[in-house]
Amino acid sequence: MSNNVNITNHGLKYRQDFAIIAGWVDFGSKVLDLGCGDGQLLVYLRDSLEAKGYGVEKDDANWLACLQNGTNVIQMDLEDGLSGFENQSFDTVILSQTLQAMHHTEKIVLEMLRVGREVIVTFPNFGYWRNRLQIFKGNMPVSKTLPYQWYDTPNVHLCTINDFDNFCNNYKISVIERKVITDGNDVSLMPNLLGNLAMYRLRSTE
Image (tube, one colour):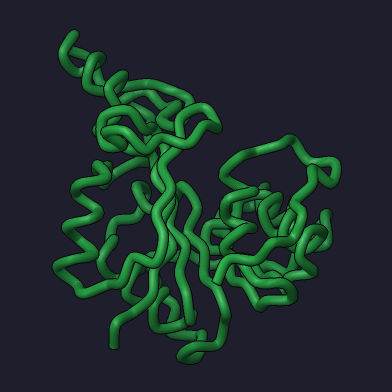
């Protein structure tokens, strides 16, 4: 059940996706953020919801930034899996705008569902109309959610909303809620065409 806690800025640059994620996390929850970057999301959840947050991050600079802002963080490569975490040891496991950079997409999502009672996954929608337009013009898309050039991108498995819906259906993953946004605004009409960021709240059906 989504909580009704009032989400405020808490000194961080406001991000609508942070607010949506916070709306899917219960007060005082134990949260694991995979590929947590500099830990801003965990700080947001800690300050807004008193969440007990833990991060996993590979990059040295981001790992150091997490330590500096008081985030509990483990330095490791997500591609190695989550075998160090016990089944259902977290209330929520989050993978925020990192899915497209994973080589083993199936493995990480299924592992998240093993470790967490609920899972939140967000990713840039490759089916967004501006991306399609750039491809139509003969170029790989570059945008706010896909900010890299083709030659330096960490992204290896870009997908559309339709693709991810099919993935969940094939693996019998329950979609509790789905939000699609563009520039911070909700998109309900033709989301696979008009939305640039997809956000899913998931649960295993097993």
